[in-house]
Amino acid sequence: MHRPLFKLITDYFNFLNELLHELTTKRIDYWENLERTMNQTELFQLLAQQAIETPSWGYGNSGTRFKTFSAPGAARTIWEKVDDAAEVHRLTGIAPSIALHIPWDKVSDFSELNHYARSKGISIGAINPNVFQNDEYKLGSIANPDEAVRERALSHLLECVEIMAQTGSKDLSLWFADGTNYAGQDDLRERKRRVRQALQVVHDSLPDGKRMLLEYKFFEPAFYFTDIFDWGIALSHCHALGARAKVLVDLGHHAQSVNIEAIVATLLDEEKLGGFHFNARRYADDDLIVGSTNPYELFCIYSELVQATRAADQGVSVGAKEVAYMIDQSHNIEPKLEAMVQSVLNCQEAYAKALMVDYDALHVAQKNGDVLGAHRILNTGFQTDVRPLLAEFRRLHGLPIDPIHALREGEYFSGVVRDRGVAEAGGGYPSE
Image (cartoon, rainbow, N blue to C red; front, side, top):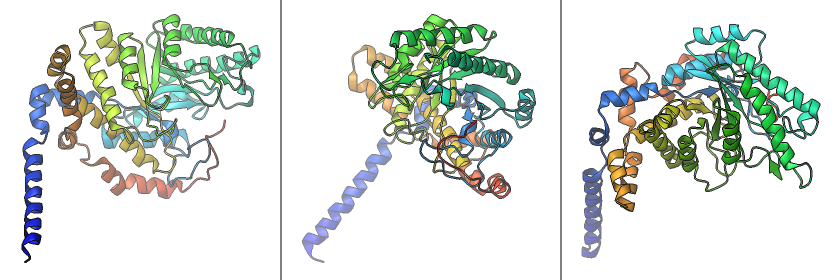
């Protein structure tokens, strides 16, 4: 062989061996990491307590505002949605409730629906009113300049409070499309007062142990001004309303480069973080699978939550433990059940990685002003491969090691495709 070519090949293989040695000797081993943070029993107990609520609208043929593509086996009724949610919980072990959207999921007897859900091993979660689809809401619902329209919207919100009582739901999840398209269209301060007045009535109607979670969005569908436009206005309302009002953070409802984990940390410290709508966005409110576009962001959010549960401030730690974790995704082109399972698993993985961080060492580095040292300690958790750990967790709890594979190979999905077929779909979301 020509000597220069032989040397080139030799040098290349030496490089590969050195690279392999580097990866092998300096890799982050999750068991080693685990010893620095907590024992396996404690970790598995925390993982078992994780609960991710799935949305009814994610199981049916609901998609984007532009087009809804028909999916084989998509749920057609709330009863079928409950069946699907129960299957996701059976596969993952950490999705014990389903959120309802009213009137999309309206039934004649919600007590019966509640009993049916419990017979399937899950419960009814957050109740989501709909005050954005009717023609009369063109200029807003609770912020509308027409008092009669505001009264109708308020009546629906109070109806949903009654549904909470019938289903055992703890949370009323509120999102409003209210806003204006043009400067001068309406009095902005007056709209704020209308919103506050309606929310106060709803807040005061809630029974003990119930909460209202106020969601925000910085734009859309109103393009000049949105009444509940960011976490600050939502927090302002919640502070004024009372103890039962908390802020809900939707990961897709922020401008590019907004630091959502900083918002989470602030709301935790204010004892006003009520819950999440988990999804992901590339540009706007895309409703992509959570953790699919920015898994590091999801990890950092969970890291703030884990630290808050361990806070010395009891108000912060108790509030962090009461945060509701909910999926809010429509799954427009991906299979509904697979997408939901993957969403739940991504949350589980992010949480497991957040638990792997050595927070004692992190806080020492932070106090010492060790910028890169602190960053490296946090990243150790993110870079840890927790998949073997989660596989062992599922094995011990009698769950499928690979829930997606189990779904694809199991009888449930093939059965619903066979029995439900492919329902016709149109554009946007289902109508009343």
